[in-house]
Structure formats: structure tokens, C-alpha cells
Amino acid sequence: MLLNRLRDFLLSVLVLILLSGCDKDVSVNPDEPQPSKGKIIVNSDPSGFLIYLNNRNTGSITPDSILFMNPGDYQITLKKNYFRDTSVVIHLAEDQELSVNIDLLKNEAMLGKLYIFSIPAGASIYINDSLTQRVTPYTFSHLLPGEYNVKLTYPQFRSITFDVTITSNQTSSYSKSLQDTSVWVDYQVSNSGIASNTLSSIAIDNFGTKWIGSLDKGLIKFDEVEFVNYNTSNSGIPSNRVLTVETDQQNNVWVGTQNGIGKFDGANWTVYNKNNSGLLSNEIYSIKVDQQNTLWVGASSGLYKYDGSAWNRFNDSSLSIWVNDIELDNDNIWIATNDGVVKFNNGSFQYYPQSFYNYPTVIVSSVAKDLTGNIWFCHKNSGSLRNGVSYFNGSQFTNMYIGSHINSMNHICVDMYNNKWISTSEGLAKLNASNDMVIYNKYNSLISSDLISSSAIDKNGVLWITNSNYGLNKFKFNQNN
Image (cartoon, rainbow, N blue to C red; front, side):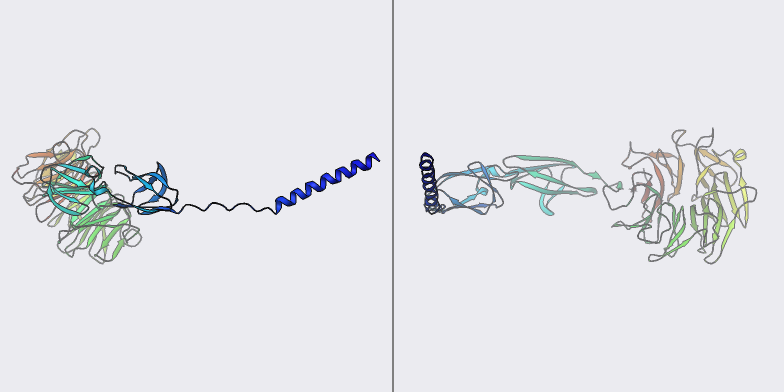
């Protein structure tokens, strides 16, 4: 009996619980509150400012709108790089659409100043490629904050371009020195379109175009407007390591490389090497073209002649001649070799032994004829004998020494004034017609480097100089100095 009553009681409780759950399932919640219809429209002049609301980044940039705003007071702050922060306080009514227009240009403190100073003074100022009609030194006022590009130009000085930053309510100051190009001009990878700083040789054709040999980037053409590079990737040149360059009367360019000769006619390349010509070696150190347009080639395997159809090799069976340079002297060909001075005439060699003629050393790197008929030679160190230059007047050698005992004599060029320009590892030496010497180096001139590899004179009397590590130099020298 007691168990039955307990069972009935538990069943009653269970029914009440179930009925209570069903009531909750069918109950209806009150309506969700509707979002506020307040709206803030933020405009700025200039545009592009990040919008902060009560010091919170909204992620919006002017012009933009902030939606679903409750009524109340708000602080709007505009932020942009280089500009001062600008804040305004507004009151937004219930469901109000409020436009906030902020003109930052009316605030003088929002603008900046730019001061530019240059050496020399009086340089024309360009801002973002537009000429300002102002010259240095000058202060520009009322500038919008931001980044600008500035260029300074001055006659016979290299123009300079740089970026500046203007900040609100500040004066940004910049001081620049322009490079004097009235006498010296340098062309390097960092400041021009030249492909390489490691240059070996130069030749100038009848049009005044410069053809420059590099040791790593092939051949470089320069017409004083633009540089053009010819390498193994974009042309038929046999190697990127150019050892010598020459031009002929038809303005063909002959390029001696470590992998043979390349002839360039302005459009097409023809290659001559030991596989397809009479050459026995591919290392070409000197090329000269005579009045009959015959090619004379100096190589590690001797002297060669090419008349356009046939190759002839000349060498001495008693001594293998390594030709470093050649110079044409009427019917004579003077040869700079690793074993001294040699003259070639009518198929035979004549030796001028160092032991007899007492010139500086047997390692002769370059040869050139001056306007009086003397033959000049550059000599490199050999054993205990020191470097130097010598000239031969037809009967004897006269020696001259330049710089220190470790100075390397690399190349000789003779100009129309009978100046002898000696390229050395300690600068550029000039011997005038009387053989008075002046040395130009990086301490007393604007030459780029003391490591001079070669030079050539153009028809205007301007000297062009190749450096072993710092590109090309143009030297507008004064003959009276």
C-alpha cells in the first residue's frame, strides 16, 4: 500500500515537470531593440585620412561614413603620416545623419617648409619633375606634408636627384654638393647606364662613338647620350671578357677577347677563333688595322695578318712570341712582348734585347708612336728590374720612371699635341711634347680611380680613360696647363 502511494506521488511530480517544460517551449520572447539609425559622414580636404572615434581606430579612411551610431558626444580624430593629428568634438542626436567636413588646408600649422642648400649655390630646383623657377639656397613654404622628389641642376655640374619628406609645422632641411663636370666626368654603374666598372680598353670610331671593352660584361657602346651593352646573352660577341678593341675605316668594330675575335658591323657579328681561322690561340691582346684595311693581330701565339680572305701567322722558331701590343709604323710593326721589344718588317723579326739597349724590363705591355717618330714602350716589373717607360729614337732608348717601384705601366696613348698619356696603377701620367711630367690621381683630381687600364683621344681633344674598377672617365684637359 505504501509503495503504491509513493509511486503515485512520483508520477504526479514527473507530470508537473513535463507540463512546466512545455509551457516554456511555447512562450514568446519580447522584440529585440532596433539598432540606432545615427550616422556620421566624415569628409576631409585633402582626403585619405584614417578616422578615429573616441581614440578608437575605425578602419575607415576619409571620405567615409560611420553607421548605427547612438546619440551622444563623440571625438573624431583624423590621422595621416607626416600630418599633425586633427580632432573635433560633435554631438549626435537621436537617429541624426551628421556631416563633418574638416578642411585641413586652412590650418597653417598643418603645412610644412623645405629648405634646400647646395654647393655651388644657384642650382635650379625641380620638384616632382617641375621647374620651380627658384635657385638654391631657398625655402619653400606652405607645402603639403608628404614625400617629394627634388632635382638640382647647374651648368657643367652633374645634376643630382633625391627624395625629401615634409612634415606638418616643421622645416625640412637638405644640403647637397653637385659634382663638377667642367673638367672631369665619371660614368659608373651607380650613376649612369654603363654596364660595368671593370674596363680594359677603349676605341673611338669616325663618328666619335666610344667602344669600350669590359672584363665581365662584354662590349659597351657610348655615343654620349646612352650606353648600349653587347654581351654573350644578347649578341654574337665570343666572350664577355674583352681584352682589346679597335675600329677600322668602315667603322667596323674589332673586339679581341679570351675566346677569339668578334667583328661587329653595327648589325651582325662575325667570329674568328682557332676553330675556324688561322689563329692558333684564342687570347687576343692587340688588334690594329693598316691603311689597306689589313688586320694585324697580337695573340699569345704570335703575330697574325688577315687581309679579309686569308690568315698568315708570323713567329720566330727560336722564340715563341707572346704579343701584348702592336703599333704600325709605315712598313714596320713594333711589337710589345713578354721577352722585350721586337720589330717586324717584310716577314722577318728584329730583336732589341734589353741586355744591350738597357730599357727598363723585358715585359713590354704597350707600344705607341709619337708625332716626331719616336716609339714609346710601357714596361712592367720583371725580377729585380723596375717598371718604367722608354722611347726609341731609331738608335737608342731613353728611359723614364713614373711613381713607385711597384707601379704598373699598362698603356700608352699619344694625342694631337704630342702628349703621351701613360695609364698606370698609380694614376694617369701625362708627358708633354718636352716630356715634362704631370700625374693625375684621385688625390689631386676628380679621376675616379688610380687603376687606369687604357685611354683614347677623340677628335675634339677630349681624353677618355678606362678604369680597372671604377668605370669610365672623360677628361676635358687644358693643353696650356
